[in-house]
Image (cartoon, rainbow, N blue to C red; front, side, top):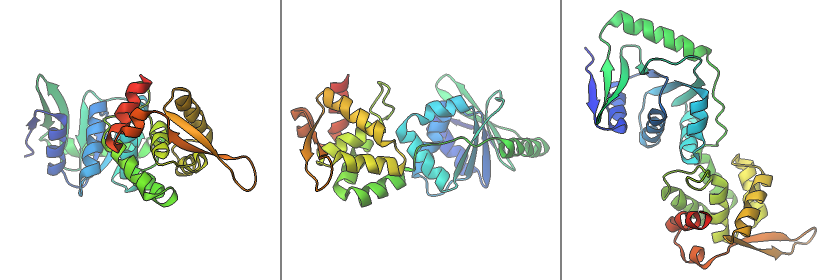
Length: 271
């Protein structure tokens, strides 16, 4: 008989649950913390059951507004270790449904539990029901490119030093939403480019090609950062056409910052 699981944190509970599971799982009506934990665990795990996530589309959009979460999720989707589909009707609790086990996630005080069902026929019916709902549900449109693709293309198209600084900045962040709670991916890309004297044309073309944002978005963000003193530009003549702009950091505090400090210094200046 499958045992109940009890842990102090959601991360610990989900790790225990996934270690107990084999095959694929349908994850029904997860909370924001469950989705974020699953993506975080999946990004680091070598082996993981296939996670077929059925979630409210508005909740998914909110979670995926964080570039750090969305880029890791895109890696899992690309690797076919996770699917994201839109749930038309919620469940009473978050459910993890496999062919031979079913858990309901319940939080209480300082603990979180996965309560296991023990009726084999009920588990089989639940799996068939939610597997069918998953199969019929529309896929969630995850617009963010996979982090592995971002890193490899940044390495190839812009250069290894820029990719290394980009990684260092991301590692220093807890969130990358750009809504007053961290920096967004375009701002991060421009700051790292400015730290390395990259042309605006090159970083914006890379960003558009890889799927981060359009050239116009990069240009608007550059103008905002330039107006606020975070970035400077200098004209670089070319053989034909208008000069291109080389990005440079526009403040001594940023120029003195190490890569892992760049985001925090920029965030303080923006706020």
